[in-house]
Image (tube, one colour):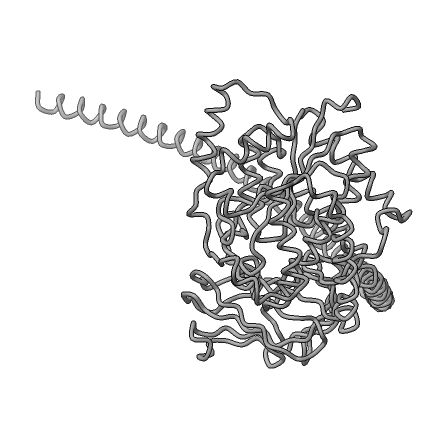
Length: 548
């Protein structure tokens, strides 16, 4: 990277100007944008992809937040803001990001419309890394940009035109002495492959063979088609635009045809920027900061930018209604709401679920039900959940989840709320103190709970000791009683054994006597039988003698 072998392309242009489709064409030509998983995913308003590196966009938001700005800011940043000592920290983050993500790429590019406001910091970083920078500026009719912002964010025309003027003049001013080429959205959609080829040749990006070039052209033609254009406003309608908008756009048309005149017009650009800077002071005094409320429908993988609906308003502290026409089916169960996209203090009076006509009320979340189905998902420093749901957000992405009681197609979500913009450092300061106060309250509550638990533990200990002593005393008493009873039983058993022994002895003597009697009876029987038989014999002999 230190030998100018690496080249970087910055694609500049206001939001909704067609920078995404241009970046895709430059990517097909061979410029590396980063790993696919690091690029921001497509969503409903840009289904073909943003082609933005998520880490770069996130870093841009951090820098703008530090500078009290945002992507939809209207006031200019401070003069020479990029030379402030605090910017050294962000420069190091940028260098680390470039080394980590693009060190192996001979030609790489990045696109984020926030670069229009932050280009000086990139120029310093790339110069210190010895990386060659070229810039491609995408131009689109300011009224087409305004129409697109109104469709996506609900911005009013004057706000969109002010944003377009700020981003365009900032980018032109910061591109001074840079190698810049200007592309018009209309002409690019008609001849995308030829436009990319001319850019590559004029800015010396990549050398390609005729076969490689033909392959790239075919791929570009397949991906980039005139059907990507959703609205068309003729340049003749520019006559109705404010003078500063008209003059700025005319300069862009001039630079598209004759880019060599760009540096000759630096004085005119600086004059227009100074004029807008004076106008922008009015926005600062009005404390006018726009914000966007978003509703996300869930998918199997979570929440996706493909299923998001939004509406915008201004953070002026007044009570206001913000209605979001949800695109798609809201199913019974959880969905997500991002109430604001700026650091802010927010009071939500009620949140309503309505039929698609915006009139028939289906459900309401307010003080009556204690906002009990609102749950903090991310960056919600909850203050109260009473008559209002009040919180502070210190970042650009506070998130709530809500439970829908019904399933409905294309409903309307209406919020009645107040929003007060907080500069990011003030939001962080307040959040830190809120966190400190909450932690201190939790510590005090925990101490009270611990003290109460200690008292209960001591009482339980005393009660248990007393009950244990009573139980031991009872057991000892029962032991003595049971021992005596056992001794009595043993003695009774011993007496029974002696008595039984006597009976056995008597029984044995009786058996002996009985045996002796039986022997005597047998002897007697034998004696009687013998004498009787002898007597019978004598009688027989006598009988015989008589008969003779």
